[in-house]
Each structure stands twice: as structure tokens, then as C-alpha cells.
Amino acid sequence: MLVAAPHTSNWDFFLMMAMAWRSDLHPKWLGKQEMFSGPFRPLFRAMGGIAVNRSNPRSLVTDLAEQAAAAEALAILIPAEGTRAKGEYWKSGFYRIASAANVPVVLCYLDGPTRTGGFGPVLYPSGNVEADMDLVRAFYADKSGMRPKNKTTPRLRDEQAVGAGDGPMASAP
Image (tube, rainbow, N blue to C red; front, top):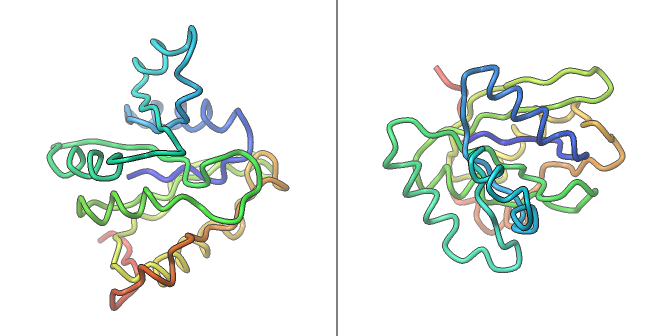
């Protein structure tokens, strides 16, 4: 599970995909369904795109968790902020999919002010969402995105409700 953040401009998608391809990854990625209408639909599908109806995601988390759990190797790139505009919360799908499939989360970033991007720590969901997200917040604290004013602080709407585990995410061995 690759988390792409901060997601603050249209360029984020192209830069993050270029970074993945340069690392010899060919991820599936989630995008709003509106991106998949018109002439770009075949191109985005061929690039691994999965259209998401954000108002009615239905069984998307379950379907992707099953694919991730069954695959020998599968990278799914998710823009956790869900939008380029500043918001209040991140979307929780990346965490729910990784937890259900028992797969790690790789924190990826783009930082406009330093003109850098890369892959951060590999983290494993513990079930304690609040503690896990504290580690995510710590990693992204000094990353601003291409348009810093649009950055959403990593926070899930259901951190309090879902956090039932014992410990924080652990770094990969």
C-alpha cells in the first residue's frame, strides 16, 4: 500500500507515477471517477487506474484488500488526502485496506519547497489507528507538497472510533 501525500496539485499524480516507474514499480492507483471519462479513460486504465465513486465507494476497500492479500506482488498507490484542496481529514481507505489484507503501508512524499520526493518508512497497521496516525503525522510534518497552503494534516475521521489495538505501527525490519 503506497500512500501519496501531500496531494496539493495536479502535478502530484504525474510526479508520483514517474517516481514509482523509476523505482520499477507499476502500481494500481485510485482516482476520482471523473478522471476516467472522456478521451483519457483508456490511458488511465492502461496505467493501472481504478475509478472511485467518492460518494458511493461500496465494496472498494473489501475488493482491494482481497486483491492485495491474494497477489504475490501488488502495489496500490492512494492519494490519502482525497483531494488537492485543503481538507479536514484524510480518507481512511489506505489504512483499512492494509489492515484487512495484512500488508504494509509505504509513506511516499512530494515536497515542493525542497523539490524532493521519495519513499519513506514502511509501516504496519497495529489496529491502534490513533497511535499509527501519530507516526504518519510525524513523518509528514516537514513535507509541504507542491502548494503548501493546500496540505491537509494526516488525520482520519474515525481515529478515535477505530483505534482499538495495543501498539504503534512498527518500522519494517
